[in-house]
Image (cartoon, rainbow, N blue to C red):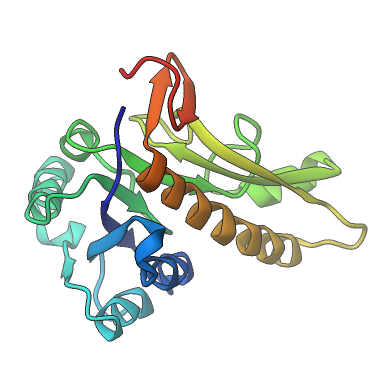
Length: 207
């Protein structure tokens, strides 16, 4: 069984999911501590949130490297300094490479009920399809795009008159709560994986 007491959180923007995790982890009973926040760009609010909370930060820009593979290796090395049990991609806008994925479990979120509507436009695609219920997914990342084992999901109703912005804002509110709850449970209870089935707490066979 894996457990997640030490978190490295990766961000690319405003860091609202990060803030929710920072707030939750301030309570010792939550079970997880954010030991570092990494980003792929400077000057973002996500880094400022970490700095205000006294959490170490680092930045690895893709443009600083001659190839994507070099960036992947450098990012994994920066993460490794902090010895995390779990890496959380909280609005991180880069696909993580093999050096990180092979070294750590990586938790990611998506604003749809996977496997429906993967990719960068999950909210728009769900609306265009005319679904009446969509939602958000917390998954363990793999080398694909939104194809990793699902850890948790929560439904969000689609209302008449919803546009992409309105629906996405409601999904993001639910997503923050689901992410905080899931990370906390993974830290306190651990998790196991059997095939593609992730169970929080005991049960299943760890891969």
